[in-house]
Length: 178
Image 1 (tube, rainbow, N blue to C red):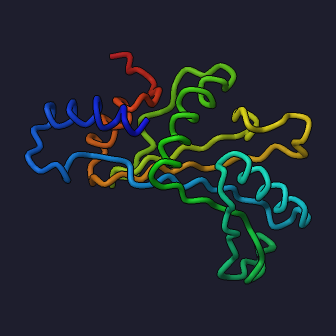
Image 2 (spheres, rainbow, N blue to C red; image 1 turned 90 degrees about the horizontal axis):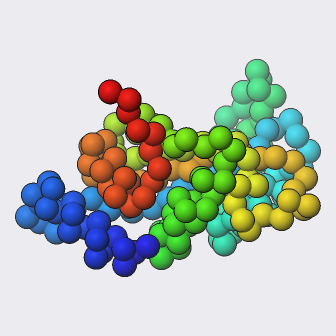
């Protein structure tokens, strides 16, 4: 995927936007995969999330800890509330390739993802309801369905440039019916 970016996507972006500085050409800098676990579930729920995220990304996740106590959510300071993995360089491109070519098309009734999930700074966030769409997951060993958030961080500060980058990289966005 990195060679595809360097040989195909990068020249197209440079030609369409007219970049003179090669460092200004849009690129992905990192992908953050986050799994939140309800604080009311038992301890094994967090262990299962860590195991699943390790299987999907190939990296050991960091456990997120609550910074404040929130009585309405029955959350205490210092309690484990989820896990996350930050992917960079080769691992990021490999994960992105698996996400775009295998995982997203295997979602039932998949028609594309919304191009409205940009944060205003060129980063794209995507929520997935079920971890079983990844081919690494063995369906017999999944104890509970667990959703995840995937954030693709780019080096540009505009949504339009980032959208063009992700489209050229193969991200399946919904087509507008105008």
